[in-house]
Image (tube, rainbow, N blue to C red):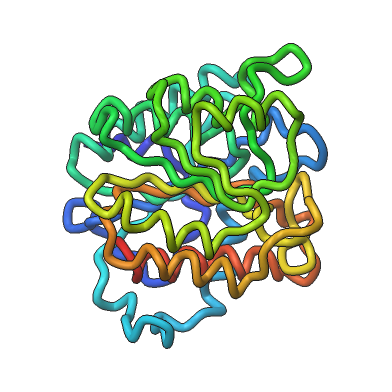
Length: 288
């Protein structure tokens, strides 16, 4: 059972109901950005995404589905011991563990990408090597350490891979990293450079019968469409392609998802938070 005193109310996502017990999906904000290596500020991402959601309709013309027919609650933002990375990861783990024990699906709003490590640690305990990870990002995030630190948003997917030691990890849209990361990926993961939609189409049939966890770093989208992030990387996909990718996963067995690295203080006219909110809405209607 969820401990309500772990959370602070920073608003609710569009259409969220109040009743946790009746919810199939649980939205949780993870306002942590301690290891961001360039522009900080993603701790304010969850509340900004919620606020932006009220600029959307609850109906998706892409899917002919409405949020009124979905049961999901928004618990607010987790309260962290600010500055303490490992204790904060432990707090995330306890929250995720409770959500999974209650047989609900988690939808997590970052915050920096390192939060994904703590989330998937608990998902792996439940699903084991049957779990597939879909990673949408500009950066490989496969470093073993970053400036001497093993806990970093640049090491997160390498630490996730350590749970599986197998090719359960699929990367899409990658266009930045050091050579060692790409050498590692050739032997240990499925990495698709630059593109998202085309390789995802080819991947869907391989994973359709598996439990799937999705992690979205907003910087997979080109900074022309999503400038509000801590490490913008030119050459990314369009917002239209990001939405198409969400729709390709329609009706698959997605058991959880996060969307991270939205940094409102670097967001021109709020376009990144609006995109993030729309990606969340389409995810709720596509596969949750």
